[in-house]
Length: 278
Image (cartoon, rainbow, N blue to C red; front, side, top):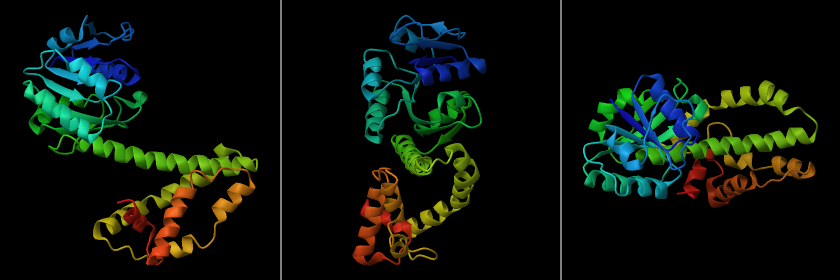
């Protein structure tokens, strides 16, 4: 199958390199020329030429507006268009309609990897949209990493992509606050992270599945540490302020926990905080 990659930022170039490594004839186009480096690809002079060159066209651009600009005026008929640009579920629905109305199949995607992981077993790419199109090009998409089809609703990949990023940023926020605390007392952050924090977090990860079950069932009764106990003292905030560490990351979370207790749910587990978000 012939392939085209539109957009050669760091991620787009990694996608093109993975296709080349698997032996797929690949055409590339980027608004700014010269981004392909030494990749063994065919350089298209225009976006229209790049679309015309291949059965499978992969978009990896800056945003929704960039995608619609590139799609404007090009012949899509008979092609499979895979959009790996980060967008919202609503934008994915709009692109699905735009592309299919012009005679092409559409898949929306979410890349759960950094560029250096593309083409390795550590990379996962989420897809949603036309299932028959996914089955047709799944082997090619496997060049990027594990290909996970989530369903026919076009926005599913974007929804799950953003939800997973939300979980990641929550973890990163907790990490930098923890690192600020130990650094304030002269503890090497690498030593703390390797010997204490990572083993502790690994031990805690199974609790996520327990909380997921509570959320699906609506039964939040705590079996271990309830919310009332968790907010009984303000140790994290007090110690942070005493060390000159900002509580901007932790304050919103503990505010929600205290509000849930004030509403009469002190015997609930942490997962019940979700009811203040929905």
